[in-house]
Image (tube, rainbow, N blue to C red; front, top):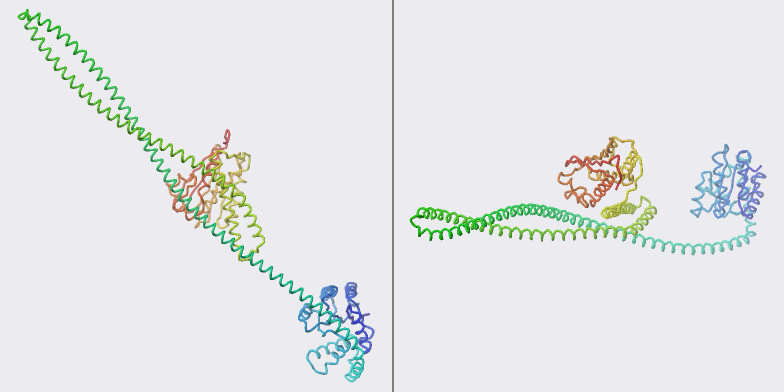
Length: 615
């Protein structure tokens, strides 16, 4: 049975150690010389039989042999499960920090011997306890106690060891040749070491080059971040310009509405003046007819006067007879002349009034011409505005499609960079922020595309039957993940199957929830309710945020409208509610809104349960 095993793959080292043990009668027949694979097999075959395992293991730590490390790993696993204690001594190079470090990795190593170990060194090491050096005294004590404990043999005396030392010194000359060969091998190893050093220098140069490349990539990433910040600044400037343009457009729309109202009043006044003119023309026709009738009467009176004069000539002859009749005729003639003068004065007044009415008619006609010119100008302006709106929609559509492809590439690059970076790196927050900005830009592009489709009448609804309760729950869960700070409470839900475009209805609810969270910076509760009756379904979203002024509520669903007092504090372009309103209109539904400044807002959309068709 092997009570001591010496492990080495070097036959020369095994032979020298065997000679050493035989010469000094160390361990007698209880020592076995094994290579590393045999030692591994010994451990595995006797792992369950501790009595067959050695009491002392001596080995050379050779880090270039894989089998040596496999043995150490196997021995370490066995060491902690054994019921007996195995002393383990390792031969290592004390001058090599790597050897000392690797030997200290294993808790079962009791001590280290200086290597290289030959016969002389072993004997000198064994005898060096006489110098009382701490290290050698410790090693001598350990070996002597181990031999005595294992085999029950007393330690050798100093006299016997001295005699053996003299013998060994005589044999030292014979070993000089072996030492020369060892030196030659050492030189060869030094050359190998030089080659490894050269390879290490090349590796270091390549590593320096890779570090420089890494620095260049980092500089490029910094430039990319700077450019991204610049683009964000430009985006904010464009948003500010767009807000100013929206304000100017709203002002122009108000002016247009005022002009339209003034034009309506002018048309009403013109219609009234035309009625007055018709009345005056009718009265003038009546006055003319009456004047013609008076002229006929006058001619009749003149004819009668001629007849009367003729009769007067005749009567002059009978003057005395007709004197009374002539007086009567003259009196009647004077009365008729007075009546004629009255009718002439009335005709003069009627002509003056007719002239005044004609002047007024001319003025009204001039005003009507001016109003028509202004109306034509406004129609031209309206057509120009419509053409500009069409071009703007075409521009939005073109820009949205043009931005989609590069934005997809940017998003893919950002995702790759986000996966490549660790969350603890200082650049990770910038990459994460860029990802959020990309998502906002994607939503903006989708809104612009929907707006152009709505204006062109090209938006189509995918009508299907779906569970409205499930749609509400999914929408709330989607927004809740993005905004964990706020609590979205579904107070009341309904189990109803609704026929409509599920995706777009969910988009309406998500838009209302996002607005409720965005405009509630100091509140953390949003309430969602869903009710139904025989006619319609009602879904409401209530927040407790900043609220909306009464004069702004009617304009909330206008395209690009934003409340001027809060436009600069919160992000957005004023398209969300416009798109939401159009989607609900397409489902033949409508919105209701109530809000108080500083108290919060209440938005609800109503969807009919039965419709003939959906636009």
